[in-house]
Amino acid sequence: MTKERKIGRVNWYGGYNNKTRRENNYGFLKTIDGDSIYVHESELLCPPSKLFSGQWVTFNLTAEERGPTASAVNLTVDESNVSAILDFLKLKEINISVRLQLCFKLSLDMNKPWFPLIKDIIEEYELSSTPENIFFPKSWCDIEPDSPIYQILPKKIREDRFNKEYKKVEPSIVTLSSEVTHVLREYKSMSPQDKDLALMWARSDAPYENAKMLSARAAELITIEFLSELQVKVTDVAKHQISGESNLWQTHDLCMNSNSPIDVKNARCTINGNTFVEYTIKRFKKDHLNQDVSIFGVLSPYLKLEDFSRDTVKPNQPIKILGLTTYDLVKSLQLEFTKRALTVDFGESTKWPIWIFNNNLMWFPNQTEAISKFSNFTGFFGHDNWFPRETNLIPALVISGTKLPAYYDKQLANWQKWFIKKIIEKSQNGELTLPWLYLFTFQHFIEAITNISSAEKKQYKPNGYYKLLFYSERNNLFSQLSTAHRPASLVDPLCIIWKLISTLDEIWQNRYSTNLTNIRRFYLKGEGLLSGYDNNNNKISIIAYCGGYISGKGKCGNSPLIIGKNVTCEVCKMLVCDKCGYCCERCKNLKALNNW
Image (cartoon, rainbow, N blue to C red; front, side):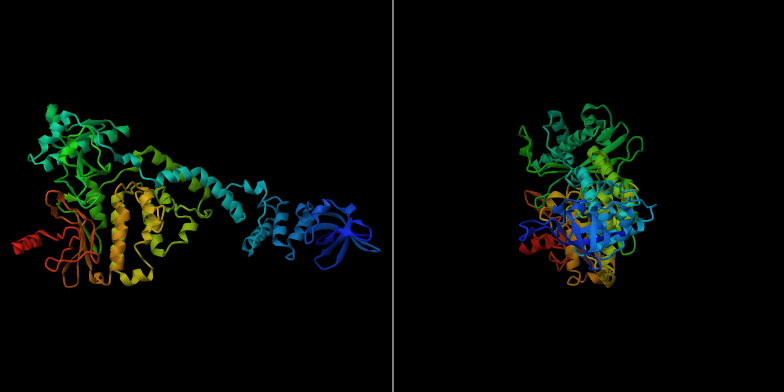
């Protein structure tokens, strides 16, 4: 009599026997070769209830005179004989999920001779059309992502681990994707001295002029409050104009930490918009020590003089802190982005665009902490172990300076990969700012519009920027409300990047009907006006804003005016405002003469 460890499946076992009128305590197994093997309850190492038809079992085969019988019968997944397990793992006839569970009995060690076999079985399991849901052992689930073995683990283990760790970092994603409310401020009551100072600045007694100056002083006070909350020591230099303490007020309004002069520039929302399109900066000044004076941008709601006479000023919108800009920043941007078909020309203009300001994320401790935690998360999982999330995490990867994981990289077109790679490089150098991102996106679009054929072959579309820069894409109903203020996780109180992409997409869709394919030279002026020249050197207005005035109310400010969407004036070739009908002063005067 000889014994040999075998594997097979239960043909049948137990059941009620009508002849004996009791439950059978025996049954038959079937080997891979199709042989029938008798098995008795006395030879079972597992509960009889586990032996349902089709169940995989291992056993010792005993050749007896009355026929082959099975002894030491156990569930295959409970087999402990290493030699037998290795033999069984090689049998393709055995269900892949059974063979995978047999692997659990072996140590998952790269130095063991059976490691390649386990790796092959895991790969086969992953490729099976309907992989069964298996309860994986704790020893496998506890393998760290930085282990060389981690990458070969079944996808289910790696995905569960990713989701588990993601829950820990999810609050940081919420922080990085939510509007930074610290830059949204409420009006504070002004002292009589503050009001007197503001009215000293007024060029006339006109209510409009007085309201404008009161709003400017309010912006300075809000800036002081904002910076003080960031643990910055701020000196209110502007009030020295009344106190006579110094003449520093002639070059700047505030001083940070005793040595950084700041001039606060306030703009008010226009009649036909919740934002503004230009800032009047007559010149970038230097203080008494010949230091450059930084410009601090603030956007205020449109208020009338009577609003300031109330005890509490409560406009419909908050004051928005737009951040800092400097002379060096402006010049460096002009130099960097003036190339090939695009000329960025701030020139000597006194009007500057709203996107020239930047709120540094380093100002906000909760933001830097969130970036740090997310960076640790990305380091934990590396490049190849990412899995789908409802939230698009590319903006968080950008701000943390992390190379795109394979999961995101394979979703992108080649033009998107190049675009986001450049932004990540800028972030890694600590140089990613809102003005830079605005101009980089703008320049990338110009490159596409001047190379239409190549861009179309690459499936370029401006709306492809949304996926790269925002936590939710444009087709998400809550995108603009929830994440439009955080392009690439930067602080954008006015959603200017979101609006820019929308504008560029509109231009792209009308590229043929507006003959933009004929333009070879583009000019972006300081106040944000884009124009171009065609092959016949005809100037074409492409993006503009309304510079007209509405009687008794102030500037119209409708923005943006877009070629293809707005009518082009036949006389001056400027875009016509769809709100007030303004195109330029010359045409306005001509219309007035004709009406007269």
